[in-house]
Length: 68
Figure (cartoon, helix red, strand yellow):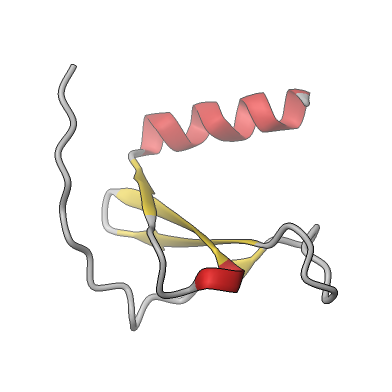
């Protein structure tokens, strides 16, 4: 397994905030779908790091999160 770091231009991406996010500075996650990936970031640090997940990794993440 290998990892590759790639710089993404995410300024024009349509971010969607989690419905579980609150307005009082709680745990806020945003996601955006781009070609061949789903991007995930902390909405409180929008200029911070962005996690990029391929379709299979995103599907597994969602399945595991749904199970708690």
